[in-house]
Image (cartoon, rainbow, N blue to C red; front, side):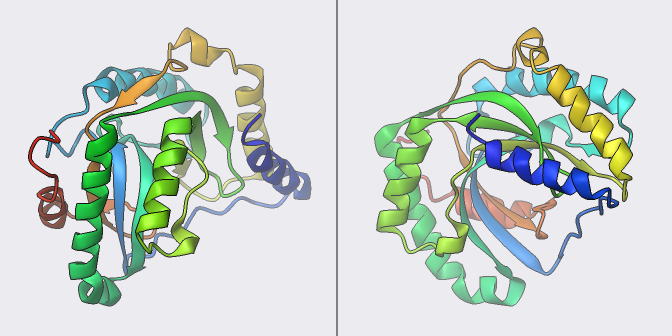
Length: 238
């Protein structure tokens, strides 16, 4: 399993028997990312491969929601995979660095325009030790793209990503270890259900988008800024 380290951290936490706390969203943070999906943002263009995929994820999450009401599942139009995190800092710092971030994103857009697309295979659902339910994926193309970006653009090293995932849901409230163990066991016993829901099929990303959001959990998209950053795509890319 490519993400065995996530599962090991979860098992270690379950073994303590401690209550799992809901994640705190720091609303003073501004995040700038390059995302795939997030159908609520139609600019520059809807990612067609994500439309049907999001519907499949919704059906999969609905059956889990009936059993585990303590998980707040992501809305279908908000499902996304973060290809790059470009900035994650206090609002005041973001304002100061905004011109630099715009220039970085312009360069990122030009680099993506050279490769045209990125294929990703999402193939496992993992419960993380912070109480998130994530769909993990693999992609040599995305790994190469990230490496190229990190070599050419001085994004802070702590923002460099080595996992590929979609957040399906997070803890709605603080939850007992016993309930979290039931969720963990459900996922372990029903791994083949991804095949049943036709989720573990490759998707091709051709229209990623820059997303500016508020909060450490990227919970509130800033539409005006998001539209501004997405005007950076070169003509012909879309």
